[in-house]
Image (cartoon, rainbow, N blue to C red; front, side):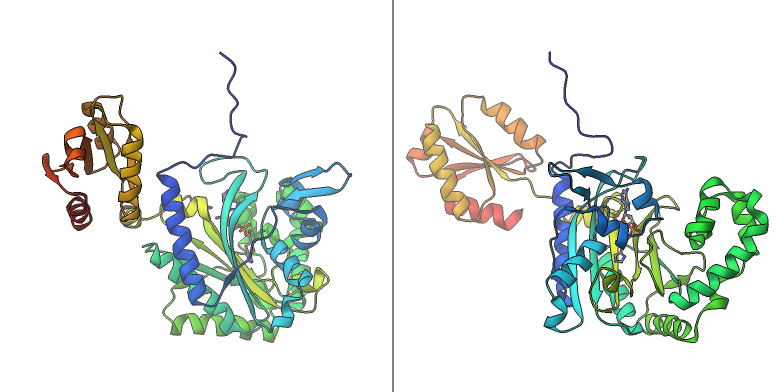
Amino acid sequence: MAERVRSVKGMRDLLPPETAIWAAVEDVARRIFASYGYGEVRTPILEDTELFVRGVGEATDIVGKEMYTFTDRKGRSLTLRPESTAPVARAFVQHGLADQGLPVKLYYVGPQFRYERPQRGRYRQFNQIGAELIGDPGPASDAELLLMLVRFLEALDYTGLTVLLNTVGDDESRARYREALVAFLEPHREVLGEDSRRRLETNPLRILDTKSPAERELLADAPRLEGHLTAQSRTHFEAVGQALEVCGVRFRVEPRLVRGLDYYSRTVFEIVAEGLGAQDAIVGGGRYDGLIGDLGGADVPAIGFAIGEDRLLAALPESFRRAHAPVAPVHLVAAGDVEPSQLLELAERLRAEGLDLVTELGGRSVKAALKRADKSGSRWVLLAGEDELAAGELSLRDLDAGEQVRLGPDAAIAKIKGQS
Ligand code: HAM
């Protein structure tokens, strides 16, 4: 036998019936985001590499070691998108969406690609559901975006969610803090691992979310960003917290939360769910007031989030799964010597009446067909034999009750619809 070709490492197939649950989750996202005035944006999966180098930042893990980058036949450097905020910001600038009036509210659903070490909840192709609110600098917009996110997760029956909230300050706050942090860490270089030593030059704030116990211990005494915030940044952050309290959103201020992408300023947040690993955030996001300007657009502030759909599904409450489990279609079985075309024609008529139907076109035993129907989770089987068809009738078998009755097609449909 020929050797089998397998899917690429870290990339997986999603199959039915699980795909029905993914679609149900995405339907809820679309409904809720629309109710907040968001429209869907679909950007290409491939972008110029430069977009991510400039947008996400050269010193980030994503750009440094996780991108799927290749040159095309004309020698252009292209990258499979590792995230969608930079592409959405590019599209916003490219199409002059600011002219429609601000704010512009966009959401997206789609695959992202990062060359990470695959493990539970971490894939090389993964899906994100994200939203970007572009053009409103005020703290109330931060709160409204978070409210929308929480409402979405509640609609999936999630409970026990914690919003982890922090501010990374504006440019001035970060410059001040960077200096203080470097001054504190420099004398302890020997405690820092290779990554953190490099970050000391490139992006010292990222050292704050280190996993190394020795570094964590050292950082316990480090200066806090909080003490270096400009008055404006502080006021903004406090106002976000107040608005969330008024609206009843539970959150916890997490001073160490800094996020792994360079474009963030001021509000940043993550949401962790019970049942997933502690480092596995299902959502990450924040403000990125400088990104659109950095990509050649006007000075337009923005905030957004992206939900890791794979992780969202892995931790999805059972109640939502049950409520959205696909209903197995009715089986229409040819009993005896029935012309397949006759059965097809009958099936089309029944589908036109709103019945979801799979056909068993004959040639196999009725017993085997009943078994298959049962295995598929279907409750109903319609048996069409020569007798029945001649009388314009069908035999309807209820696999749950183990009963069978003979009746006309309309009565069969009514019974199925009334009881399934
Ligand atoms: P991020 O934190 O890099 O942010 O990713 C957001 C979410 O995507 C994570 O919380 C996680 O659930 C999921 N995710 C990331 N990498 C993987 C992976 N390898 N496998 C499975 N899931 C993964 C962003 O991407 C920003 N664009 C979010 C944003 C939008 N900020 C502002 N607007």
